[in-house]
Image (cartoon, rainbow, N blue to C red; front, side):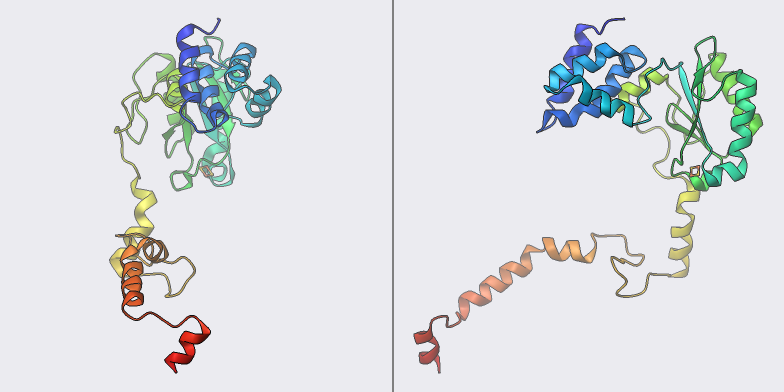
Length: 261
Ligand code: FES
């Protein structure tokens, strides 16, 4: 399928968001994936022309990051975290059960085109291990059974919500959001889940703070900017110093110094 005029227009719009147009390449590639289901040669060419760089440069970026796909992705990209913590908590078992259940290997898509299965690296959600991601939305604390039920529901076309709240959209829709075109679902679900805040809660309850003078430490007072930032932005101190200087100018030349003695 050829890129349509609307997509070309949106690619130019993304490039125009940045002082250096080439900074827009990553979201532009997401938009190409949204329109074509993968990074196609035509998509690479379009990005190169708009950004006035070579197709090889675009290709170098697209093949470096694993979020860019050269093969078509199904309606739902299901990523199973198999990094250390998730793996020992059951991630390896989930991945192996899904491979068998869906009859696909790593980075392969089911025959009906609904699910692409991939083992993914740590998603910084280790406190919810083992985690599965669907189009980059979290499904926390999974088991082989819950993961099988999840993909069955997705294949059956049921509405599924992430364990953190948002309704799951298709992979192409998610790619459009990553390109910088919001889908209005940003407020669905909490910003930080309970397990991520347990440590802070315990510290606050017990009055714990990092030792005084620890590098970059703010203790438990998170109500304002860090001291070094506050000092750097506190213009009142600078104005006070300027006022004092005005009232009592210091001698700067040899003659003035002599006179002052
Ligand atoms: S190891 Fe799976 S999210 Fe960190």
